[in-house]
Length: 380
Image (cartoon, rainbow, N blue to C red; front, side):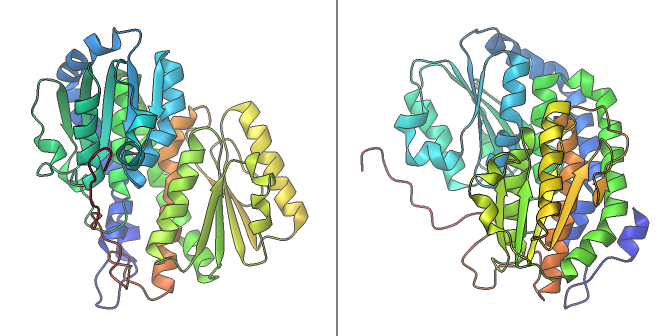
């Protein structure tokens, strides 16, 4: 990793962006997150065991923006593993339409993700569920020990504050996204199981950082005006996060889209032109992978897109960012190395446009911690 740091691109004042450092530190922050969880395994299991013993427990994965996409990446997999109702519901949806998303008579565990823990919607969502659900408990996963979410100390809540390095200083969430997602996956899949899984995941992230960085810099130099991210299963949420990262770091200058590989044909494919880069996250599941490969081959036969890039751990599919060491891994383990090329591409695209990645929004209308939200009372 030191080689990457030594050739890191600089912003106008000659400094290295926090955003780049936070992308590069992810192997270390994933390992540190696992170490923290292992140390607190007993407490976490003691909190969750009586809740998971309720057959009708509903688990809601909630956050705003990137934090919400963590739930989209994990919900279906965790529901299958737990054999219970696990849903991803953004705090922005809970706050704006609580009658649609909250069930007063259903025991609920609200899992709140928050980098800062100070988002107005995150705080309001916690208050709403407390007021509206009879049997409610909270698992809070945050990167900021001083945030409002981290300060919750009620008996119905357990707070996991991740290592301070995960509290990204840059505008865009990078290592905070991967660390919070890792924490939730390990907690609900079995922290002990990840004692062995963390090293292959972290090593794969390191490998992608080393091989993908120069390639993503070259792609960014082509200044595509449109970029599409495609993925199925857990990778649909990841595609959404990848699209947002590019939108954020280029200050809206790049039009982005995300979809599933099968869904893309149903109209969204009209988005593609010669100035479009398409990135496909290829599943390790044989059935899902077959559909991913079909789409890649179709896009290349069409000869319309400017470039088509696969990200794959199961072998190369034409032009591919290859993830090493996880060819037999679950797709959820691939989330961590797969997001790296998208983060790097967004970083280089930001620099190509002369922007400062840590503060890319030139108009100042979008902030690191969202501002300007007025929380309305129910029925107002």
